[in-house]
Image 1 (cartoon, rainbow over the protein chains, first blue to last red):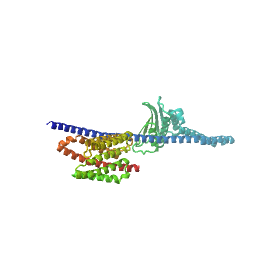
Image 2 (cartoon, helix red, strand yellow; image 1 turned 135 degrees about the vertical axis):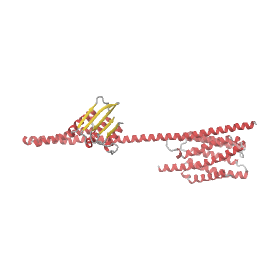
Image 3 (cartoon, rainbow over the protein chains, first blue to last red; image 1 turned 60 degrees about the vertical axis):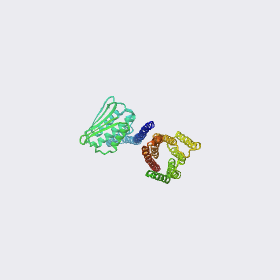
Length: 259
Length: 217
């Protein structure tokens, strides 16, 4: 009887050990697959991050190259064409001394045109090399540009610059100015607007640049992503800025950028 | 011989055939697996002959257990993920295990009997290698799906088979007392044996596929 009892006890231990063993084996297998899944997720995350970094790096390089090209054009305009036009002006002045005053009217008109060309070259040089933004700040650069646009385009431009706007880094200032230029150029070219409002104001320790117009507007969902809009999006991505476009056909456009 | 035995012999034959058909394409680790298939097939055929002729096949198994452990050790020794310490462990345990087996036969003159203790030791040692291999897979920085790793399937096969073998050999005396339970257990064990060798064959194909993909990459 003792032997049977002993065997039954052993059998119980056998079954218990077997059950425990299967539980351990199952745990090992489940652990392996859970860990593998975790590793895969981490890998995907890492890959995505690397892709984003790579993309940002490419956009940044593109922007740097574009900025360098603009600077080069500005230098060429100033050093080469600017000098030639100045020489032309001096030449004009020399001719003006040689001809009688009653015949100088046409020459004076020519001189005015030359002066205008010099002014335009100066403006382009300033716009292209971005030094004005770096030296005088974003607000001042935008204000100057708005003054020029008012006289050139005849569009009513309302500029509102708040006080105590947060200070941006040089890089962000340049980027913000380029974005402003891109939006204003598009508005003048395509919007057919009579009123443009530009606002620079602080919002939650960030700088808000809002440009709105009363032009023809467009359907935001249907708009094709051309180079203008892509440039804006790329620049925003580079400086971690957020952009919101609000527009409807016939109801104007409002673009807000938070930097 | 019943159906399970025929299926077992057939699987060993197929495994050997596949292993040697693709022998040159296999990694060193899996070459040991192919050799294990060949050794097991030869061992089982000779053991069957001994059983029929002498009514005892213990001498064959006494020799085979040494070869088997060395070949399994080879699989894990040459695994690309094997670390320094597990390699030491494998070499030392192969030497020690061989010594114990030979000492038992020579010193105690037990060629015609077979010790379940040896099987238990073998299973426990193999489980250490398997668990270490799993750990190395977890630590591996390469992101390869588990089911695309040949060694993973080898590990799975050995993990389940050796755990069950260890359990059965540990409680063998208890099971023998209960003839019905013994009969059921041994039949289940034979079925698991078939599943074990089928998984090892599948592991060879997985390994071949992974080598092929590596070459393409």
